[in-house]
Image (cartoon, rainbow, N blue to C red; front, side, top):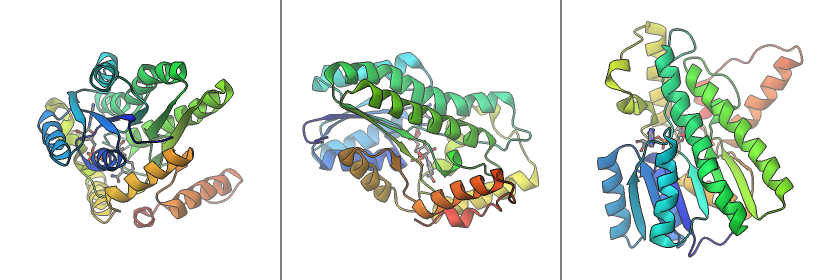
Length: 281
Ligand SMILES: NC(=O)c1ccc[n+]([C@@H]2O[C@H](COP(=O)([O-])OP(=O)(O)OC[C@H]3O[C@@H](n4cnc5c(N)ncnc54)[C@H](O)[C@@H]3O)[C@@H](O)[C@H]2O)c1
């Protein structure tokens, strides 16, 4: 797909990987619609991109709400006359599998899974009708293997991999020029470890288990030593241009995680989880 003159819609576009993807798409000549739940960060991102010459609009949006994601499509059509790319990028993480209240599971699943479903439902029919488009859904290495301390996050990212793979097969069967990719990064230097900034206040501080806290500190330090979001944005752009499904920015860790699961399924030992391994490409 050519990027110049196309319109890219990016959820969670105000920070981290979403903002880096927006910057990369603008450099390639695409127009941008950014959706984010953090309105101040969104306004700042739009201003920075516009000052650098991008054609960009920001729309306040909670991806868990279907009508908010439809509004992103309508903003693309109203401002730029079309939409060609949807990046289902917005995501949050919180809590282990043991001891996380159901409301926190619902919050993570709402953003990470319903957000992707809403993106597919809002954009894929349009892409099929115009016989052009690409859907990038953001999962994680945590969508390829379980990680202690990340129960709802792993559940949601396994779901995203399943949805994206199914979408890929269905699009291929359709014979249309609409592509699908899934992004499975290891650790990237963003604010993902501060996801709970967007968690409704009454749901915070639900877990003071010292082991869980220690895992949180380890995960934060892994995020801090992760790769730069611009590296992810470059890999995403290449995958769209080459119409490739798997975007594995930490390929070695992704393949090793998958191989270890197969060995475990085949009667071998369960893998020992080492967060350090997921910081390196
Ligand atoms: N950073 C990592 O190490 C890493 C690794 C693997 C996968 N990911 C995934 O990458 C994606 C982007 O995260 P990031 O690392 O850039 O984190 P980030 O926190 O820097 O950015 C996420 C953005 O999503 C927005 N957001 C949160 N909830 C939202 C909602 N309900 N509706 C709309 N926007 C919402 C946030 O305001 C923020 O701007 C996520 O799906 C995340 O799970 C990140």
